[in-house]
Length: 131
Image 1: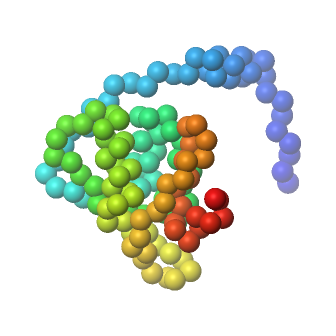
Image 2 (image 1 turned 90 degrees about the vertical axis):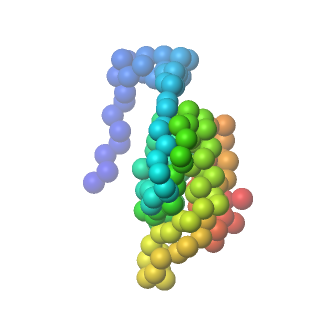
């Protein structure tokens, strides 16, 4: 059913070596402000945080399906926007569906650094498994 992965080609190995040695440069980002905070997808905007910052976020699947109230009135550059969004997820109004409780959970997830450029984003009840 699960076949082993075929060996990578020389081209793929060379690309990997090149991108490990010379990672792509992150662009200049500008995020315009809006009038009021609105519910935003945690998964979608955490992916955008990865694109802007280069930090890879490993998000619990239930947290990823949730939303957070987020918005800013002034224009922000990339690092400012990433800091504002991750702060909103850690301290703002967050909700996601908990299939075990069959109800929405209204608690902020915990960010746990997991290496130089990676971070775990977990519900509070799963934090002890990763410490």
